[in-house]
Image 1: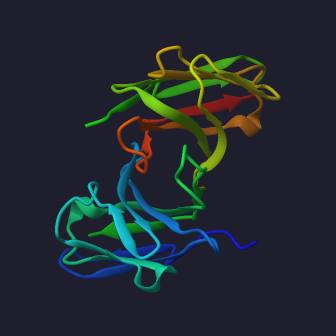
Image 2: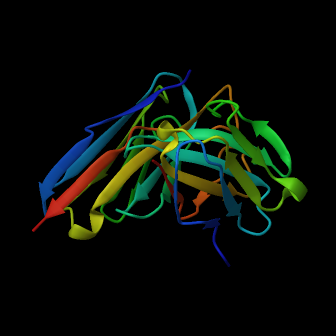
Length: 115
Length: 112
């Protein structure tokens, strides 16, 4: 079974530019999550999709971040325009269900550096 | 909002010594999960605890969920260099079924 894949693995962009991150969850997983880890600190929740619907986007920092999951398969996270504080590792995770907590399967992450 | 803190932030032990990380939530949790992230890697699920006072073991690792379901601990007996990494607890509070809030993490370094 293929795991969660993320692309790109690394991205270096200048402040003000746009970056789009992609996540392909494990096939059959309806739940898809985006998390971010900044400067080796805690892993912060960004949002949660159930199929193509946003279940919880309370962690999205501001309107410069846009997440989509058209068709309920892969997801994209766009940052536009990027700011220096957006640097960090963006993790995508998927799970089969949320009832009483199915484990999350994480991708390898995208390391974003904004200069 | 919900906060999940872990202590210590960092611990350096010699191989063979024991290690414990403690996780404390500001709210009551419906369940708690533990993850391990190796340097340069991604978080990998270790275990889930659901019941108050629950204790689970995985070889040298012992996980405990507090009676009040607001705290948890992970204890590693006789650490090995393969235990190196950052250990995160993650909990869902009773009011929000979907959001898994991660703790601040404890980075473990093991040397020979």
